[in-house]
Length: 326
Image (cartoon, rainbow, N blue to C red; front, top):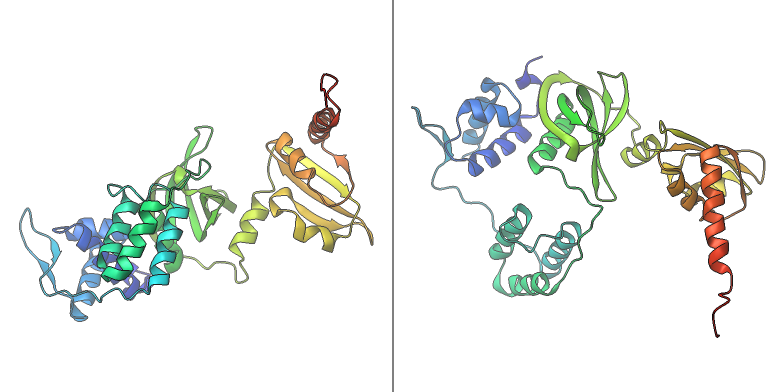
């Protein structure tokens, strides 16, 4: 199946328009690379835009290429004041350098604010100037172009080839079916099926070096729950196995623990098991301290040692200070 037959013409045309607007004079070859399709498919996307009345001009020669001609009029932004303020607040909350007009996010936010009616823009600017957002040290944001490519491939259900570098520095290439993109605790993950490894994988998008959209189609699982599947995936395959017996029913415990800790299994009417794995036993011990019932460590000597260490620290902290005068 060719790229033309496999992709959505409407989605491809809109992406092509965005690329041409951002890179006036882009050639058909470069446009095809940006879209991840053949030159023929890129030219068809331009034809679709022209058919919709959008003036896309082309020039031949060494410095020729596509550009948006005069006469294009985008519809005005019609945000209410509440919508504009909510948008600014969401951007500041999710991206703490949004106040920098030289940055990608700050520049884009500035364009939106400038396009708003004056009374609405004034309120939005006031919130933007007055809000002091503390940086989220744990947040790791991927390259926007890389993320956009993966989103498009996921929507169009087309396989991708990516270069990946792990946290430990190991590098490899994989061909995957990009099921979904999930943002969790400031990190962007690609939930996918790896054709290279023949298994489900979750890759951090900020650790990808190159992403190439292929022509091969795929079908995601029919009942896929991306967030749940990602959290379940992050609880397995780690170095240290864990098995905990908890003094409460499975249906009581399951909603109160993160799926990253493992799966909850019934083990009697008023008892259940928590089975998982971790790469950080002390962190896992800290999570166990918040369980809503008594528990026993059935498997996992590393976890048992860390729970004992954490318990001793907590007991020591509860002892009265002999030098205190109170």
